[in-house]
Image (cartoon, rainbow, N blue to C red; front, side, top):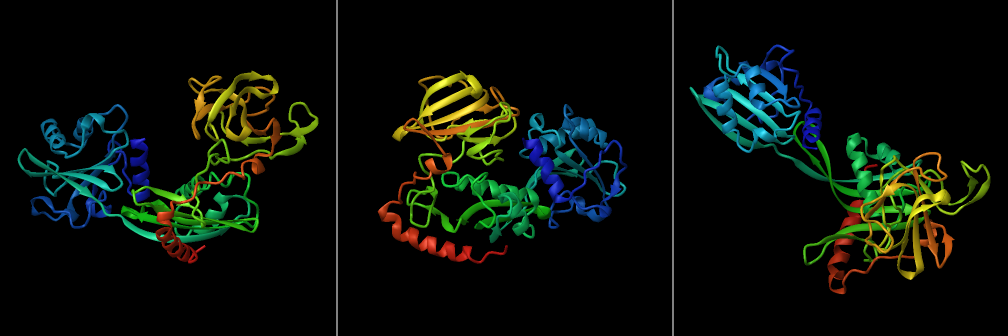
Length: 417
C-alpha cells in the first residue's frame, strides 16, 4: 500500500525518475528538483542550478545502500547517509521509493541525497564535510479550500460527477467523491439502482492541493439529493463531545437500522420484478435484486441480526438468511463462500462481512442475489427498507445544529457544476 501511494504521488507531482542504471546523469537545471522547496539551503554554498542530479526508484529486493552505490556513492558514505536520514528506516523502505543523488560541479562525491517518503514528505541528507552528513526532514505545504458542485444524473453518479466536477477535480478524486457521497447516503439511497435520469445533487466539500498539483478530496460538509422531486439534505455536525455525524435537514441522523444495499456502491444487474430467468429460460417472479460484482467481493449484513440459515439451498446456491427486528429477514444468495464463523445462531452487526460474491446455484455469472422477507412474504427491498429512519439529534444540540445547517446549505447553493 505504501509503495502504491508513493508511486501515485510521483506521477501526480509530474516528477520523472528515470532508471539510474540506464540513463546518464543530467544537469540539474534541465530537470525540476525532487520536490524540495526553492528555499532549501544549498550545501557548501554552491549554486545548486549547476549540479548534476541522478534519479532512481528502489527496486523490489534491492537495498538503499546498493542503490546509492550504483549512483557512485562510496560504501562507507552510503552507510553514513542512511544513518543520518531522519525518519527513514532502510530495512522497511518500500519498493518504488524515489531517490535523487545530487553532485556539485567538479566534485566526485555527491553533495546531497533526497529521499521522497511521500508526496509531501522529503528527507534531505547533505554533506557538510569529508565523511560528515546531516539529515533534515521537510514537509511540503498543502492548500485547502471549499468547493460546491452541482450535477444532474443522466446514467449514474460517476458520469454526473465527471461532467460537473472535471474542472476542479482529477478523475481519481471524482471517484473518491462519489464513494464518499454513497457512504453518507447508504442508509437512505442505493446509489446503484435508485438514481433516475433527471435526479440532481449538490455537494459542498473540502479540497486539498499539494505539491506539484496533487489533489485530494477532504470531508463532505453538506450534500443534497433530489430524487423524483423529493429532496434529502445531509449536513455534517460535530456535537459537544467532539463526534461528527451527518444529519438530514430535519435533524435526524443519516444512519439507520438498515443499509440500503448489501454491497458497497456497486453496479446492479437487475431490478425487482418479472424477468426471463437466465438459466431456466422461463419468465418467473424475480423476488429480489441482483448486484453484479467481481467474484470474492465482500457481502455485508444490512443490519444487526441473527443468522438463521447458512448453507446450500437449491437455485440459491450458497445462501445466508439473517433475522432482524420487526419480522424482517434478509437473504443473500449465490455466494462463493461464507465469512469466518458465520453459521446458524451467530449474531451479526450492521456492515459486518458475512460472505463473498460468487456464482453458485442457478447463476450464469458472479453476482449477489438479495431479498427482503417481511412477515414471511418477499418484498421489494426498495420499498421494504424505506420505512426505517435515523434517530433525531439531541434537543440540547438543536439550536447550534439549526444555525450550522442554514450556513452550510447556503454555501451549498453556490455550486459550480
